Structure formats: C-alpha cells, structure tokens
Length: 374
Image (tube, rainbow, N blue to C red; front, side, top):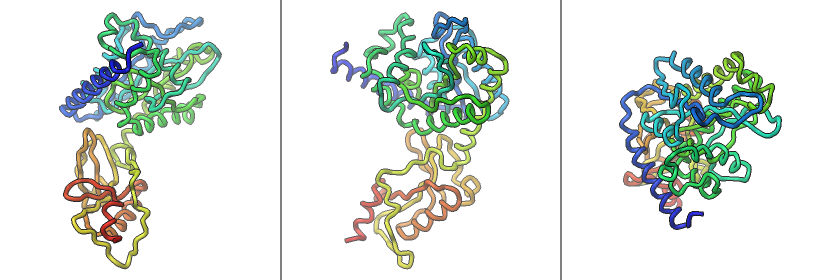
C-alpha cells in the first residue's frame, strides 16, 4: 500500500497533467463535432472470458466501426477511433487520443459479464462517490492495467484494487459530469424505448479510461455475453444494427440539444437567489453592480445573435475554461433583470438564473442585494 504522502504527490502530478492537456485542447483546428469511439479491450486482452465462445473485444470493435460509419455520414461530425483492428491499447493511450483531438465526446463500448445469468444494458459515467458495488465493477475493468509492460510508470501511485485510488479519479472529470449523464441517459432511453432492451440504468464507477479524458465521457455495457440469449443477440447482425442505431441516435440528440442551447449544461447556482420577492412597480437599482441572466453553457462558440437564442437580443458570451457561457440582458436594475428572466423562461430556457457582477468580478446575487436591503 502506498503511503498517504506519496499518494498525494501522485494526485498532484495527475492534476498538473490534466491542466497541461486541457490547455492544449484550446488549439483545436477542426471545428466539427468530434466523437472519439473506443472499442474496449483488444489484442492480448480479449475481455472477460465466457463459456459460450464470444469475445468481447470482437463484438465491441464491430459495434464501434458500425457506429462510426453512421456518424461519418454527417458532414459536421468528425469520428476518431482508438482502434480499428484487433490490437492491444493501453488505457492511458485511449484517453490520450481523445485529449489530443480535443474531442467533444468520448464513448467506450464494451460487453458485460457476470457469474450469473444477468442481462441488460448499462451506461457508466465516472463516479463522484464510491460504494462497494461500483468499486468492484471498476476493479474488473481497470485490471487491464496489469497487462501493460510499463504500468508502474504510466499509473504511478494508482492501484486498481484500491478504493482510495478509485475515489480520487472523480476529481478531474466532475466538470463534465452533467453532460456525461445527459448522454448516458439518452443512450439508455434509446435502448429501452426504441429496441426494447432491458435497461439497468445510468451508473457511476471509477473507470480509469473515463477519468483521464477531458470531455464528456461514457462507457457503454451493451449487454452480458455470459448470458446465452443476450450473447447470441450481441453477436448477431440484427443485434448489432439495433445497438448501433440506438447509440447513434443518442449522440445525434445530444449534439442537437447542445447546439440549440435548450438548457443542457445549464446549472443552478447554490447561491442563486432568483426567488427573492421584488415589487414589479418600483425599480431596485444596485449601484456598481451588473445583473445578467445566464441562459446556456456550451462547448461551442456560437455568435451572440438573436437567431441563435430563440429571438432573444442583448446576448453576451463569456469563455470560462473550455466552456462558453451565454447571458441575456445587462442592467443594474434587479427588478428589470427578474423581468428579463421571465422572458427567457417563456422562450424555453426554464433553468435560466440571475448572476451578478461587481467591478467585473462575479459575486453572489444575495451579496449584491445586501446594499439595497439596509
């Protein structure tokens, strides 16, 4: 077991690596929506063994190639594969491919296995907290690290069998968790609603390959190859067509939601005070403070024009990290900004909220209003 001080140094190193890789991501040359597709396992790593003769690495590759072929029909989508043949890739290599491409999505496709006749689909995002069940699941997927020749060098301080190591993985991916969950839900909804598969839901686990990617990322377990009936389905042309269509439709829906700015990735601030009662027949001016309504956040830089925001004018855009935040309105009148918030809600931005700035710095709305309540 690594000592706690050593573990802390390793985590700091990982955070620095994360920052440097994220900084490189701003150099993206191709503005197409980029999807990295990762076929799980490969080469000397066949995946979990099954008595029925199915090989996870082969099924995963067929699904990835089929999904990619469908996505490539869209001129505005760029597809990158971590592997297109039966080769062994180290986990850190898979993540590096996605990071170098500054991808908009990372999707890893797998087949599940169990010592029972369990069946159904599961889509995973990175866990922000760990429990005994998802720790065991993560251990099984992360153990491929031990097949790598220089795993001590590439994953120094990380132990796939250590709950502490698994818990720490969440720190570098939390920024994209909401988007990852949205995509995962789209996928599972399609599995359940469109091809009538049993969905075991959206789940969270500490998968290294998800942790080390700096974009929304999911890992899809398309079914259990240890279940004879489901294994037959996953290995069939019909089953692979069904699964491919479901995943492609989920990606298309996610992309549309993102680009139409319908509220995806818009979050409510813990300090949001938009429910504070104000009188609409008198103005509430706050000196040296500017209020705006945040209506959307996206990885795409859209022109702040009314046609991109359902007819709303007076739109401003601000870049924070790799995200662009979009605001409606600009006023020191809190009563007026509340009215603008209602207009934004009537246009479909139901989760929009008021933000405040003082001397160019963002402050809590409650703090901004203190001076008017004295």
